[in-house]
Image (cartoon, rainbow, N blue to C red; front, top):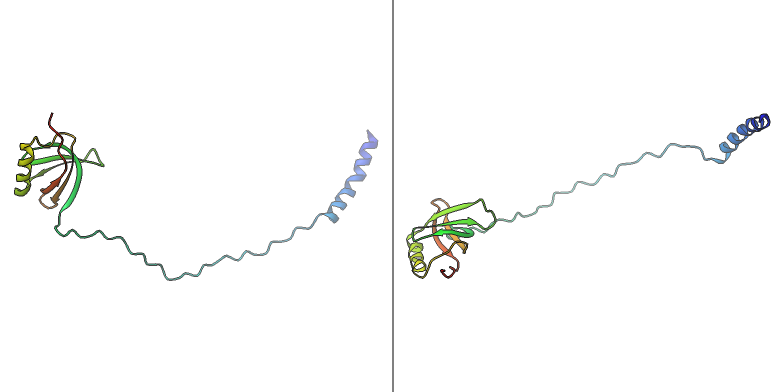
Length: 133
């Protein structure tokens, strides 16, 4: 065992010297130059502007919950929590009277109401009433 320790003791310095010759030395890295992007003029992107309504009416798409000759109550198509009741204008009331005489709107019929946003009064509406049962 002593012979092995002597051989290791003599070989260790020789291996360190050989490692010094054959291994490349560590050098400092070259400084990294940050890439600076030229700040150009910002791009102007036109925002999408909603088309102005000629008649000032707002569109509401929904499902009929109740309808009579005086008002329409509808639930929004995209949000089940939004329920709006629209009183009918004179023209819309006359049209609704004709529809009610034929059976009227039933619960669940799809309807589009065009209303005045300041008074929430339905000026006109579209939708096919289902056949009464």
